[in-house]
Image 1 (tube, rainbow, N blue to C red):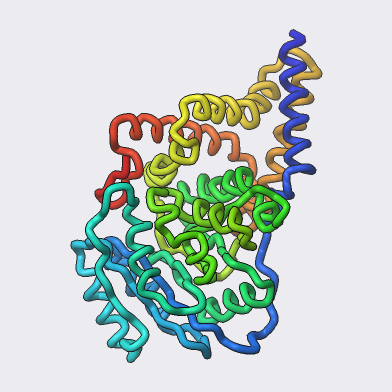
Image 2: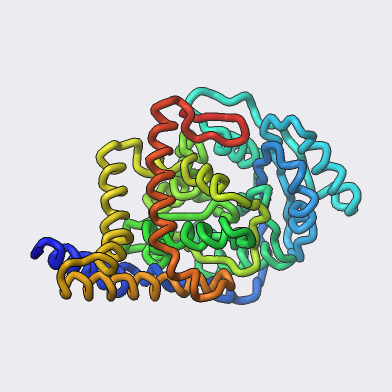
Length: 376
């Protein structure tokens, strides 16, 4: 019986550590308002796009409508689309009278050792002669002042990379169940406050909106430095921070992803695409991750429900309460009712299973699946 009590106390102690000594990861970090720009640096917006015809009419106009007084230009890289992505982008810009602000270029044939998205990003970056490059996913809708705010932040704080984790779609049951959990787990792995601390080794970014200083990108050798990365955003942040650059990652309230995940299987595929890559394709890290998720999320619940000793039951109960309390701010950030904070252990089970599936797909040569393209 002692083993149950000890394991319960250990799980509770782990959650106490996470609550008070893990970079306040559970507390949503929102961007500070930057000072007004005294001068406007030039910016090129690089948008890698693969079969994005459906979403571009909703997202591209938001980039073309940017209220930015400096020189700016959009370079949309058509990554071997077969749905007319490039032509639709040109038509949108022409209809809005913004054709001069958009260039549509074709991604090169995928070279050995390169991931598809990074190759497309690199094509756009190589065509840029601006002071900064904003890498923006094609499914992201920006407010009119987005570029101005990002430029103000990166210049005011003399940063080399400013990244915003965009607000993900959260309307379906699957999204309410799993999307806030996705962000919570991401922050658990990469506490945002530590990422922005030059003294911390933690480095992370979110690829939906990344403003990068061109001089720093050149300093690290360009995107060739991360050419094979499936998790390109965190890889870029690590390379920049490793070269002495300053980075910042926060959540965004007003930059939104329009990509929807109507079913649990849709979120599952999103996780499985890169989870095993995150674990560096290591079976040992995979086993450790699954055990860690079970220890943190499943064990306290099982002890609370079935513990044979009072100590184990109380430890499980308080661990469950602390888990829900730490998750509640993220649930609130996504404007959900508090009861969703109780679902995190179930979400953790789904994430563990999808991570195992990610490893299986990798060993089947189907890893990194994205729009008909596999990278492993």
